[in-house]
Image (cartoon, rainbow, N blue to C red; front, side):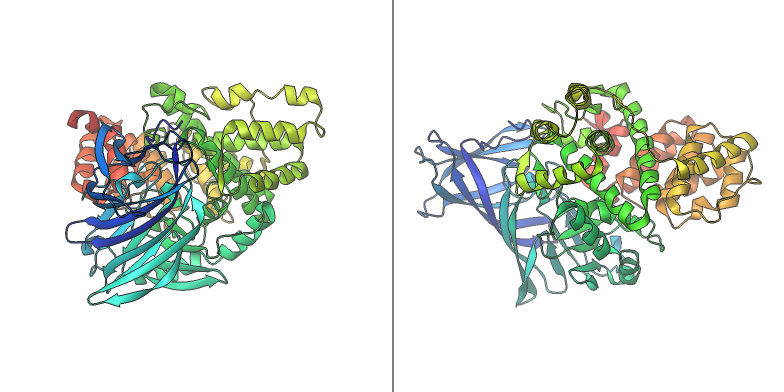
Length: 604
């Protein structure tokens, strides 16, 4: 059972959603209906239980008979409510039932962010985008909001004529209706509800490959197309690793800056943050990550959020195969060191407050998956797979990965499915004593860092940390020797400096040599501001506040606000800045930062 969903999927399971919605920018709602096709999986089924969150339900009907159905919305929790639809009789196992739910979303729906024209680059038209991961789809559409209920979907979306609607599906075209356009979409491959995605805005596109285009507001189009021009090469390498790309199109939508993540792997249309745009493709690896999700997460999905590492650990593994194919083994291994650093930071943070969330398979009963979000499933998951690959051998593991993806394609899997498949595959390829040495329980259920550390290629890493050590020792840039470095080397360099206690004079000198505070690369700017805050380099604190108030990516926003609030002299300014800009942030981000600053509990 999924502890984060009330969907009764053992009795009746969703197979398709057919959405017909009007986008209302005036009152910040979606309104219309959804036809939910289900298949009965138990002879004891007499009702359909759906996850909803602050939805206004006006009518429920049986599309086969046309009859109205009794329903009730009850059992409120922190995750939402239960929509109970009563059929009035026991249904036959194997029977298909289509139910229509007419509804309107709340203006405060957690899946939806509504932007005023002033919040966009063009300053003329409003903008809407969704973020349904992890359990926010229920605030957008009544659904069985669990990854275990994968389904296809179709949609008709009515928007103002000047705007374009995009979804995580293939577009079938649009028709004009007076002052509006109606866009139609079809997603023929079963996906979890969290991958239903919608964006509406004044956007344009440019082809960047034979099956890819970039979408964005006009002012960012050329910069986006340039930074993401390697998309087709990423896909081609991923196909070598994982098998054919079955989704048809792979487009990228560069969203306004309030988008809370680096990227979101919505099928056919990856959402990304504009903070990736650096002018030199330095952060395009995030697109490689989202492309990898086309197999690991979207095609094969975690059965519940407790097995989220199967999505993200596998995706990190494939991403680094793509990076190795594109840029070479040394750069891929440098990425592993960066990931390990982030993992250490998050494990240290969680071990103080919620140590169980450092497990690869945590118990999420009563826990919002958003609260569990960290680099643990990404990097601890990756380290587990890298360890298992080393035991099995690279060629054998490559074969196993393709078998895994083929076996569970269009379905879901658990960590124990992976354990069983790995051991069965490896039994005649690896000595039994080696297999017996794998500490499965510690890897999956143990707190903290990986139980068995990995060894990565450290040629580039040593160069970065050696220069950092020189800075820590000398406190100035006279020994700087990094003119030919690429961006991720500077990231490792700054991470190493961040572990030390630099003086404000050293932080100032660092900025004078490298101009990190004005860098076009947000990864470098973010890391430097953490160093500046820690060293109490007061002169750039206003720049740090401006930075954290202009971008909604939680990777940057949450650690920066936490760092600022940890210093008594900066805490008041940090809280004031957040409160002033709170409506700029996505609801997910605003909630998490409120918790980080201790405001959420106070408001409750």
